[in-house]
Image 1 (tube, rainbow, N blue to C red):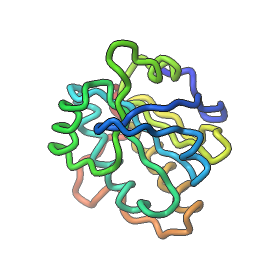
Image 2: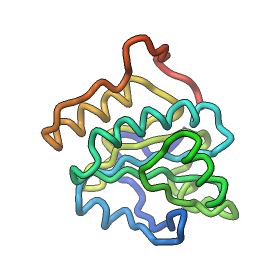
Image 3: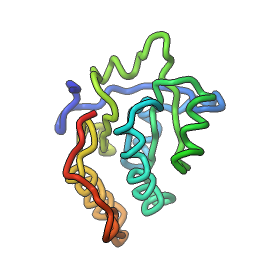
Length: 165
């Protein structure tokens, strides 16, 4: 679970990416909405979810939308995860010694993902894989960017409605 639900304000933070460059949520929100996805590399539901997040990223990259993964593992292992699951959007590192940002978001399970509007309000909050919430993010981003939605789930793919994290 998380205490940060749709309608709540998202806690602001600054985290380094996998090469140590700092990224700040309030600066990202000045450019547009943010898709934020917390994960652990060993989590099978995270491994299942991230290719769908990558599809969303490929649809909306370059459109004033920020996508960030937030890894609860070290940078080296996170790089390997990104290569294995073809994740090309930026990934930030929540220090394993404190999980400061994960704790600010009161996470108990991963994956947990959010769509945060430019005013800092959470539009979508999801713990675990949730097909409907990914579709809601897609619809919200399509409306925001005026881009045509592309299929998020392909014909023939077996995609359950949800998977607990």
